[in-house]
Image (cartoon, rainbow, N blue to C red; front, side, top):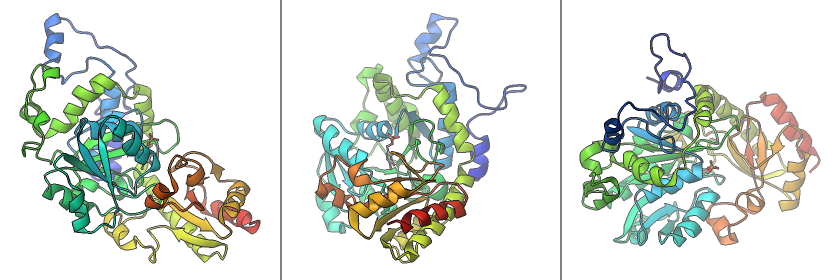
Length: 420
Ligand SMILES: *Cc1c(COP(=O)(O)O)cnc(C)c1O
């Protein structure tokens, strides 16, 4: 099925006479007739037993998201941060390292560079433009994976997924891609060689700024039996000796994430959150089309203004990443634009504060137009060096185009720019 159809029909099939919309199963527990049945659940946990790590409403959304990305399975989390964290912890232990491009979301930079370091896991950052030799030089015997972001928040650098997938696979390790800004409607990283895809569903997937969430999706394509991943091929003593690749085949990664990490950590969304996420997903393809169209118009407007010094939007033909955007997001470059106003930070603040329709908020990819100054907000914890490495100029404004009528969005920009 195509995306529009998947978004409306996948994940949940009503029984004869059953509810037409996925029901909210608001229950911690599930009841069983026999003690033996419960015991069996711990051997092959393919039924619901406890909502810390599995729930029918969440499961319906997981199935839909897996199908949308072209994966074999998915696991939802309470936030995008939790998805990124668990996607790494499923492969790395203390003493391991992994490689990430530096053009990623600032919250992820902090998670990788500060928090995971305290777990004893080293993140080696590489420039997205690094040469093959430089990339290879970053590989160590303990390197377990490569990480990148399709469309970097907020630098809007486009990640060369195919190139980094080849690099990872040549070294016998998987590629994880954060596909939040592109969404599976605009880019399906698995088709370009990504092995694992993560999302902050708080953004376009939810789409309405209703609830935080995340998801990890497994392509099912990576060969965990290549000798580098004994935790997949040797008995898991924390799960009475299960061997993940033997018992679960190409779903080994995503089931291990649930059985070990979600079981122990419990960063699992509530049924009601999944219900709301599902509601957002139903209209995702239509919304993405309009976001792209509105953003293109706004980007061209900014481009034509003599008050704007720099416009970054990979959908513009003269953008540095236009060619990569055409390859990875042929139907549109999503709804976020980065701009730099002449007059530096003071002018940026004046422009932002003068907006009447667009809101100033710590969010992006909202259904309503919103703006943020990353250097003093979401990316405040980063040093100037880290800011530059993420592609963030101190004067940069992140302009997230919403789904209001385009004439109203432009009129708002126009009136505010007039006062700058
Ligand atoms: C927002 C965001 C995250 C973090 O997601 P939360 O849901 O806020 O935890 C991760 N990656 C990207 C690209 C994001 O934009």
